[in-house]
Length: 383
Ligand code: FAD
Image 1 (cartoon, rainbow, N blue to C red):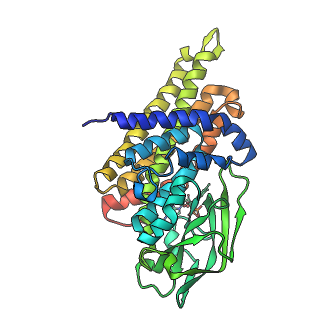
Image 2: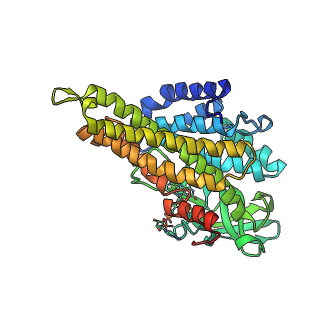
Image 3: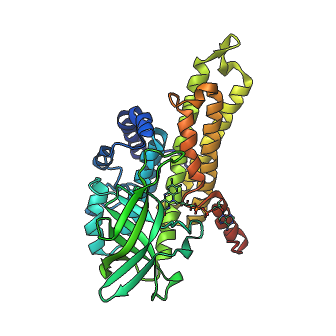
């Protein structure tokens, strides 16, 4: 078994690390305080190829394998989870899904813009009344001739107020297929679609999270992504890969927590010596280090399975479950190393903890990941 990186993968990691240190880290606290990432970062992410990873070059992508995608995602998560989430959604949940499920026309229409950063995508599954039980969504799409008329609402949509296109899931009432859910690519300037920013988030404050309302939104039948009635499979396949991306972002958070804790432990003195000399501080640091390694190895395994064309969905749930809980533990341990200074945002631990917390909630809560893993092991669905 070979767990090292190829020269090419090392080069991608270096490129990502340099990009993050130059373009993201110096701004992360200011963006967090302002509750808005500078939108110019999207164009820059596109120029450096990070919005086109794993997408074919003929559609404007930059190629690369899923391990490279994880390496970039980890570095982005290390710098600022708000920026990491923009990429995980616009590329990971939207562009990749269009590449996998879209018609040739849909790929040509959307992928060059999404991969260059000229366009931003968002993923509209959750609703005010349905989160974990996403298949029970209430948004309706009714066919009228060559059009669908969509009514409903979506909640907590990352990139929501920035996005140019929403990959929207709605119950297509006449569809015979799986739960009757269909996927649509809806331009956000379509009449009847309105957006409201969700303020007051604990973390990911720089990210544009929105509530979407759809009132008699008309889209042509060509906006349907994949087969009518099979949209739930589209959503679940997007989330299976998305969970790997969340896990990689969590590795980045945990690594940032480790770096910060080690640095501070060497600088801060109490009882006449640096706090690194105290055994209980070393315990906190070593706990973070083990979490980082374990989360990273679980995440890389998912990337390896995908790149080898093997089943990966359950492994992705395991990686997401472990890495998200590990990121919360790691950031909390780092905060403890910083003492009172960990509690103010001039130091990194507090923001890492706030940003880590949501990772155990979205793209399936920790409880939902356990049900996915438990179902695979026992053959019994406990949802
Ligand atoms: P609920 O489903 O109401 O769950 C409440 C509690 O009940 C949780 O603890 C849950 O684990 C537990 N629970 C539910 N069912 C079970 C069960 N069967 N067994 C045991 N426990 C159970 N959604 C999108 O579609 N697109 C996005 O871009 C997006 N971005 C997000 C960004 C942020 C910052 C946040 C906070 C959320 C985002 N979401 C997004 C929504 C997210 O995926 C949901 O919040 C999540 O799936 C949980 O749904 P819920 O909040 O409705 O909680």
